[in-house]
Amino acid sequence: MVRVAPIVAAAVLAAMTLAAAPTGRAADEATPDAARQRELITLLRQDCGSCHGMRLTGGLGPALTPEALKYRPAESLVATIVSGRPGTAMPPWRRFVSEAEAQWLVAQMMAGATGGR
Ligand code: HEC
Image 1 (cartoon, rainbow, N blue to C red):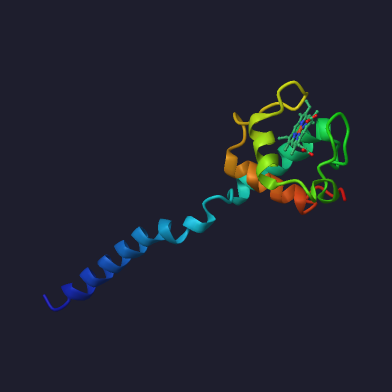
Image 2 (cartoon, rainbow, N blue to C red):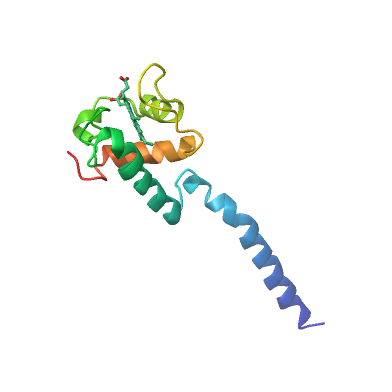
């Protein structure tokens, strides 16, 4: 009996740690995991790049460089990615990209992740 208590205590601690884990990560929930980040960067280079230019410096679509996006509200850029711009060539991406992922992509573009200025 004397030996049971520490084991129970350890189990309770482990359960508490497990229960606490998702709460502790809540702040990061909007950030895609590393594998998804790689997929999104590939999407940005290849799919978005087909219209916005390989380095996002513009093509059929406007430049998506830090310089070009400097005064654009991130929220409206996110909405454009998720919903597209009806009447233009910019398609909606909601089937491929969640709103949180679009937010992450906008942050990448504003940080110059694909090399354009
Ligand atoms: C088929 C061509 C095409 C593809 C593919 C495309 N876009 Fe666009 N995009 C456009 C066009 C054209 C516009 C400008 C729409 C307008 O005239 O308002 C635009 C506008 C935007 C804007 C708004 C820019 C601003 O200055 O307001 C953002 C942000 C954007 N696209 C991001 C993306 C992202 C991210 C992807 C990939 C997930 C993507 N686009 C893929 C054609 C495209």
